[in-house]
Image 1 (cartoon, rainbow, N blue to C red):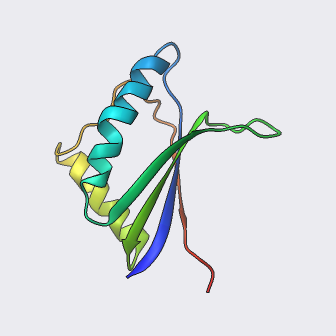
Image 2: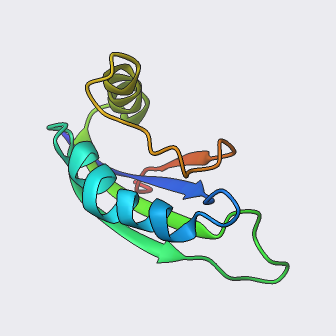
Length: 102
């Protein structure tokens, strides 16, 4: 199996940053890591010039053959209500898959 990274860029809804961060740190990271193909996770605040569209970033390490398949499996878990999306998260997320150059 290959190593891949998934970069997820997100925002809290205005005025709900504390709730968003609590959910992300205490529930969401654990939920994502319950999927066997996701092995590590770390969160970051973003900065740049110009300022990025998203304030938060999370990097998830995956061990799998195809990161998009692993992501679709994760989305299915959310769709089936096996995992919960926090209601303090804005819907404008971005997901980018990173694969090591060979």
